[in-house]
Image (tube, rainbow, N blue to C red):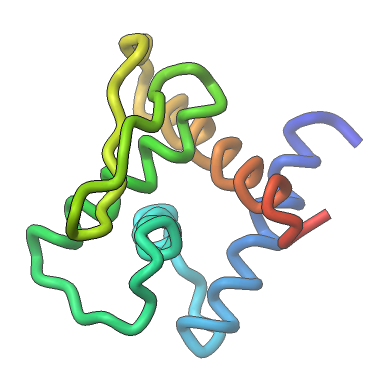
Length: 118
């Protein structure tokens, strides 16, 4: 299986897993999955979030997802329990499709790292 085929297969597994659990089987998009990862990383699963919090949750997720690529580094958790990251390296200029592939790779890597998919 080629690298692209493997990524697609694993991505489909992640989408199915999360869609079945959180969306009654309706396929979740990449942004929704990033948002769920942000909630997971914050660790406040049963909390209602305001609009600004939702943007911050996605930022947390993106930082965490891109950390293995060397773009971000974990810094600290603030007194409210929110993780903070610092940029280590600027992201290269990517086209929209390339950004999507990078984020899907990062999400799949996160799920592999956490033993949620094979």
